[in-house]
Length: 390
Image (cartoon, rainbow, N blue to C red; front, side, top):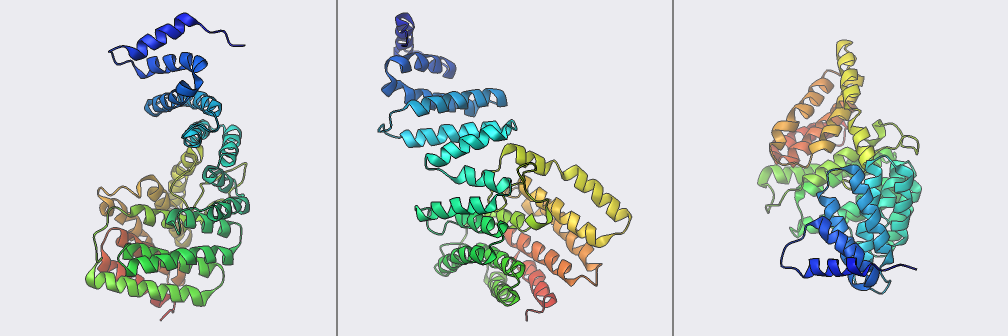
């Protein structure tokens, strides 16, 4: 039985009714007291205030404590109460993110499982993908699709296809991605999306089919991408679009998954296929590989081992994209050196046309992101010839 401190309740009411502006911490203190006597009115306010204070915090340990309390409070909200599900989702999402930021993966995963039971499965799917459980992650994506995710959403469909591909289900992955691609074709024809996005999707689909051993479909997708690039080089985008770098970044980073160590529960890797939902510890670990990769690149350069150097440099460039690939300020100037070096090194490998085609394709897609369409078309046209698609 809870003992009510009536003096504390009176002080809390006076604070809330006063003419001054209480601090966030003072509000939380008042809501904690009043939530015991009027839970229907004040538990939701307590959840909101705790999450707002967490948003302002810069201390990971404080973050996790606030999110834990917010989650406990959100669970107390009556099931029929307005916005209960939304508050519970926000609280649990903040809690799992705070736990992963501290490297407390087992606890974070348990909260993700609770969040999935509450109707939001994306964080659990991301954690499963980080640990290499791609089939289970894809099953969650499939369930979300059947329950009505936004139709043909780029972000949902790419993640789903990436998880299917990670599970080795290449034809199923292509079926999902082809549905996205068909929707993008229709939208591009109606000028409801950018031709750049269509180009990136076509090139990614070609990579998917090449991996599946379907060279004919891969070549057809590249030829279609070349036609779209020719249109861009000739007339540009029919409409101006806001920043779409996230589309390029997501597919470019996903294209590098096969070159990275395999994900496992003991050694998690990023959930390639999404630009959102990476656990903080996994993101930090992925970017933390940079010094070692740069040191390896220096050794390979000194030994003139060009094939391995080309591959290492691409992994370095992908990490640069993870770090700041969706920042438009000085985008072309910052990223040009990565892609120019990749092409320059690959041109020194006459016996490796596939590496040169890959480097040219990478640079072409980057140049599309930078809206330099004529050189993008020239690079991709050369890549298509190298791959004997014409």
